[in-house]
Length: 321
Ligand code: AVI
Image (tube, rainbow, N blue to C red):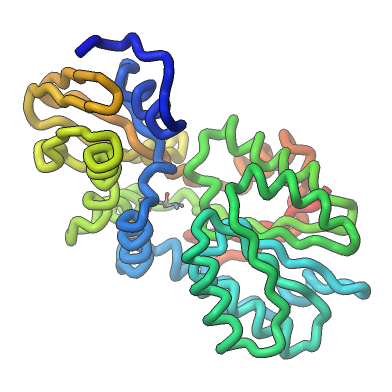
């Protein structure tokens, strides 16, 4: 097998894995956590007591449903567009309020997973009769391009779960800019940002004692084994989390406990690992008002209001043009 010479790839996944594992230091992209097993593990993470993000955001939406629904409403009705809708548990709080208030709106949940959308649509029909739903399957980027077409009436764009935290600031700004360019003067962006807090609380959220987060992180190696014919000995890697309270950046790593050589057949690649060498797999950025305002300014957006939970662990901000 040759080393580091491949230039043609059968898929973007192949290319990204090749690039990441032939770089120094090694890395893999966190978007590849999410195959069927990864989706399931992430659902489990969201139910962990240590993973406070989900409960905090649920509380924020639960305690402020009326006020938020009121801010979203407009005389000519609106389209509520959710990027990365998932199971919609938190959004249902808002949807129920809007239906109870007889508001004229259509819910457009967007997700990469058609399965997730089908399940969501079925549960919405059952739980919230009368709700107008138009699901859209696709990546954020592709769908954002389409968003500009929904120009007939006010758009409210929802991005929950602090998903933006998995992007470096530079990429977060590009993401916000893309949303901004699809927004008219009446439109709103409602987005969740996990906040800086006691570093131990953050470390615990990403390093649960039951090992679900470790399994989630290691799932990327299982994916390489099954999809790219790799031979990672997954148990010889350690899940490791760091948090830098100065930058607010939590980072996940997989650390090789032994010196080893891993082969990936589909990539015609052999990768050498020294003992304790790392693969960086994810960032989960934590924010404060100053960082959020800076990101907004860079993307030509303005923060017009925000909502937080009792402990101020998490915040949802409303942005406008
Ligand atoms: C999806 N995303 C916001 C999660 C996070 O908190 O960064 C993914 C995750 N990684 C480990 N635990 C949860």
